[in-house]
Length: 281
Length: 281
Image (tube, rainbow over the protein chains, first blue to last red):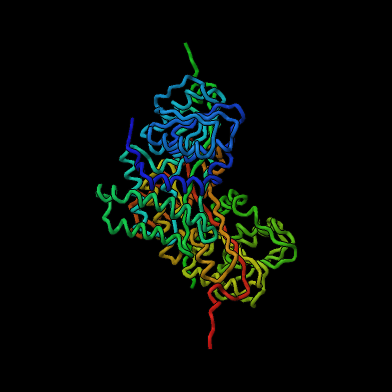
């Protein structure tokens, strides 16, 4: 089940994830709080970009943050120590083979993880297993199909599509945001509520233009240049024109739009909607 | 400047606009209020779908609703009478040749109009002329490039593109929503604020699925079937598959996303940002 992480693991990627996290914290996480004493599983914590936020938002919750990558965990631990967190424990684990028993957690938090998995429904089922009845799962994902901008640009769209295609080839889905409702439904969760969080950046919000349009989104697309060209997905000059056009949307009269999806759902009593068959003997 | 109205003027279109208006009223208009005694120009009122809402929201404002089409105005008057409105006056007028002097109005309201004009900046300038200094303009537009859904479908995307292309050939722009900021800027307005209003429809909100996904958006695309086929934009069976796939997004595990943009701006003191040249003699 181990797949190449499409964004890579280099230093620039860490910087990107940090910029992304600080700009989007308010938009994505301002309504995520967990009660004192509750047991939280953060599944796929990566380098800990979100860990610091959720741990600070819920200082009296007991957080277990897991990731499959030892290298990422090392970075996450460093960051956690630097932030002075004392309510987070880091553990190496595979979402599909979690070393926890049934109902070990009160709440589960998964952010920017499902997009990288070839079986997101299976992952959600595995997470449901370790969640207690009545417990909640919070899932946050982007959707690259939600990116549009002014001035519009075919080259920019093609460059974005390279990222989508590379992620698909690595077994993932860069347009998974819109699918959170059907995925959680299929995995047997109940009380599913999806809340889209749209980023709209024009010159009125220079911090978003800088932090999101340029340093998060465009930097991410720029980051797959070599892989895209090597895979023959796009000619170099078209890719470069695409990146140039994405930066163009960050100028004074430019506009950039992108939507993240935040879903919450509950682990019901184990019976799914479809289990109420008439049984006749 | 008179152009074909891409949606046509038939009865089914009126029903569509009514369904659209009632479902979206809260999302688009709940924050539009005008003070008692203020003079409002609604430019391009069409059949009056929005007129009833803004007139009821601001019962003591004095509203002048204009449209270029006598047929639409007749319908709008009927609707206004049926709604018992007593603060709206209807007049036939062309936005580009308004029969009003400078600063005749305190506020201007334009909804689903710029998308049909080949010179939206010129229209905004004409509206600015009749607006008093410090007065506001409110502009609301959709953006068909913001439509995405699950399950995704190439045929559905192609059918939507037919509408975009037909509107382009009629001189309009079905993806104008994202451009409100640069358009208002170019027209010389100040204090421009754009607020995207995203429609997210899954089974949790059956009224949105029914009222928006099916009766508004899909019905609108379905409405250009004959024109699209006649213009040779798409083969009939692909178009029909596209419509079928759009209805599919309204099923139990389907998701539909669309974004409207609401912008407000002010008529400044006449000096634009760029007028502060150093004049040396």
